[in-house]
Structures are given as C-alpha cells and as structure tokens.
Image (cartoon, rainbow, N blue to C red; front, side, top):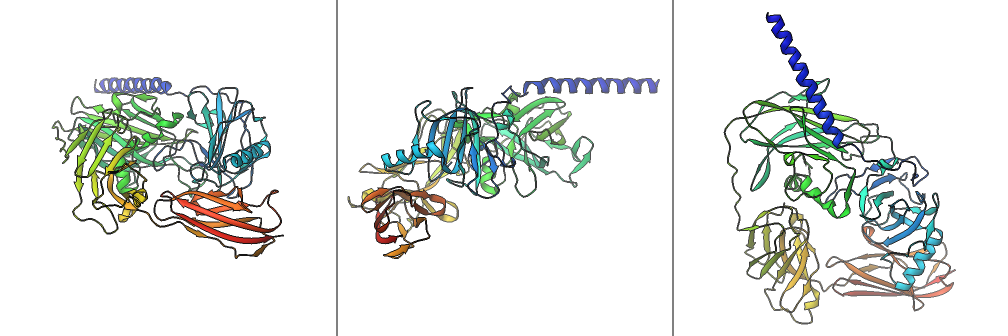
Length: 584
C-alpha cells in the first residue's frame, strides 16, 4: 500500500511538473519574436562581423541604441548601404555619433551609420557644399526625399572614430522610419558569432514600499552559496523574507568571442513556482525612452558602486517597452508561509543561457519600511517648485520617473571663487527622466559687464565643479540640470587655450593638414573659425581629443598663406592666433 501511495505521489508530482512546463511554454510564446524581413539588408562592412557591443547594452545613462561593429582597430574601411534608399538625414557633431548618415529605405526602415571618418562620393560633395554655405562644421540636415539616392552595396563613407567614440568602430542601427523606434539588427539577419554564454554573478531580493524599493538580500552566485546542478545553480539556503511582496534582480555579464570585452545580456526571465512572472527582451525601444535604463537598474546602487543590478520588477515610471510579459509589475505577493521557488534565466540572442534557482519563504511577519528623512515630496506628472533662500528648483510634469522624497540645504560656507552660496538638493542618487530648472541669485554684487560671464556650476565627484551653462535674467541665473546634487554660481572670464603647433613662416611640404590644440576649463568650447587669406575654411572639431583640424584640399592656395584662428568659449571669451605658412 505504501508503494502504491508513493507511486501515486510521484505521478501527481510529474503531472504538476508537466503542467508547470506547459504553462511556462505558453507564457514564453507571448514573448516570441515578431517577424522582420531577413533578406533585405546586407552587412554594412566587408570584414567579418565581430561586435564590440550588441543592441541594448547598458550604458552610463541610456540603453545602447545600435550594434557596434569592430573595424580591426583602424579607420578607413568602406561602409556600404545595406539596401536601396535615399539619404534622409546627415548629422555632423563633435560629440555623440560624430559624423553620421541616415538612409531611408522603401520597406519602412531607416539605417544609421555613426562615428564615420568621412562620407564618400556625391554624399561627401553635398556635405562639404552645405558646410561652406553654413560656414560651420557641425550641423543636422534633412535632404529632400530622393535627392541623394543610394543602391544596396554603394560605398557611402569610411569607418572612423568621430564623436564620442572610445575607439575605431562602426555604430549601426535600424529604425522604424515612421515611429523612430530602434530595432535590434539581429532580427533582420545581421548576425555575429557569439561563442560565450552569459553568466549571472549575483542575485538580489528586493523589498518594495510607498517610499521606493531596496535590496534586502544579496547572494553571490558561486560554489559557496550555490550548488551546480544539471538544470542550473541552486541556492543552498532558504531565504526567509520578513515582507509579503517580493521582487528580484540580478547582476549578469555576457561576452561574445573572448573575455576581454564584457557586454550586456539580451533576455531575462523570472518564474515563480514554474509560472512566468516577468520577461525582459532587448528587441526594440523608442529612442526617447532609452534613459529608462535608470529605472531598469538599481540606480542608487549603480551610483554608489558602479555595479548594475537589473531589476526583474517595474517602477511606476518605467515606460520603456522591453518587457514582453509582466505580471503584477514583476512583484510576487506571498499569500502564505509556504516555500516558493524562483527561477532566473539570463540568455543571449543565440539561446545560450545561465539559470539560477533560489527558494524563499515569507516569515508571516511584515517588517515596516523605514520612511526616509525628507523635507519635500515631489510627485511625477505634476509641476512643482521648491525654494530655499536664493535657490529655486522647478520640476516639470516630465521630470520624474517616480515620487521623490527630497532634502534641500544651503551649505554653511561660500567656497572661494564662487559668486553665490552652494545649495544641495538630495539624494543625488535618484534618476531624472527629464531635466529640472535650477535658479540661484548671486550672494555678492555682480557688475553688469560681468553678468554675461556667469555660469551655473554643478558639483561632480571628488568635489570638482562642472559648468551646465545658464541664462541671466537680471536677477538670477537659471540652468537646466540633468541630475540632483550641489549647485552654485561661478564666473568664466578666461579665454580658451589655443596651441598652434607651427611656427610663423614655416614651410609646409609633407603635411596635408593643420592641427590645433584647443581647450577651455570653464564654460567649454563654443565656436571656432579659421580664415586663410581672409577666406573662411572648413575646420573639424574633435572634442574628445581637444583638437581642431584643417585639411588642405584642392581649394587651398599654394604659396604664402595668412592664417587667423579664433576660438570662443560659451561665455564669449575668445582667443585669436595669427600666423603665416608657406605651402609648397
């Protein structure tokens, strides 16, 4: 009889397990990939496709919006149009994507090519003509439809390292032309070899309340705390939680072909007792929502430690659409004190995955969440103004992801070199969805001639100050701030630093360009102009290397050249350098 009962018990266990597998399989179908054309777009380079960063990687303040393709650590590789279309946008900047070309295709998608060294052919001629019309290197231009037509396989430019790039590579995107949503290029068949599976390094248990969420338990996924099994790593200890609503998060890493370059995972799944609770998948998102990374991760923990804990539950203000399945915002409510099993999967695009299990149990006693010490509560989707003495902070309806509990303080001593007291608005480790407006009235009198030189300063790490600009209205200085922290008024009366590396009357024979070092330690570089024989010529600004470059071309005269370089900072301080060269 005992054998029969044991057999029946095993039978019911198998039935329950099968039902869990079926339920999980049905839920997984909900997050299946949408259909995208696989035979339209070719690979944009003619070298092996080796990615340095996949779509959606976690960056400092955003999800990576494209695929970074390695160019063998060099510049000048031909970049090809991935399909027929026309150039719909050209943007040249000293930062960001640097030199970027956008091609709109008749199938409803737009391809983007960033960090280029230069454009090619008709596109290059068009750009140079437009820059000379503007008398400006940087621009954002939208040519008319079909004005610059391209065919699949045409060379549109050459790979480079322009803009905010940490090394030579091609930044490549595919967007929905109508919605501007950015889509993972791998969904269109643009694949790269991925040899290494993801690894979950740490799991956390999260507690939630009206005052926000916090990490309650943290477990390193190693052989001390976890046991390796055929289906994944199982936590050895039972986690007893003193709160009935439970959330989870994890820290994970992925690699592609070697362990030198760590990237982010593509997909994550959370199931509780065999039922899908939460899914994250980096297939597509709106460009405007990419800053939601700051509520996708534990932002406070990241600011304090540099470690990104990805949450498998949602804040109220998380709007990015990378979660194809969410139940109860990812939070699990314990209805009893039974033991529950959480399963976390981290996977790459090719299906390689790491699985972690942990058991948890509600103790039956609810631990109260200690409220923060705050002086002001600011609600999302509501305009709010906070004021303390000469300081005012204004929050728009779009400034916040979630409710904030803030402190505002006037620091006791005025720092030497500042023109106002310093004001702190805390905590600094909370993310803003959009900037806030901060205003300060100077503590000391400022002469009218110096008022245009005022700048709003925000304190960075190690007590350093950084200018965030600002406008003077006759009474106070107002600027937009992308984060909370410490603010004060400074002044910039110092002209930019300009180094001309050629001696006057020097003969130029082998060199094909003139390069100048430019820097400004106050408000930052604003504008620049080079006149050669009293005519404006095109100068390129490389912000990350503090360099201006003038490339000699067919219009550069031979013989004696009278050169005059002027550089302005953002407070209209200028430096002018005049010199002559002999070009042979």
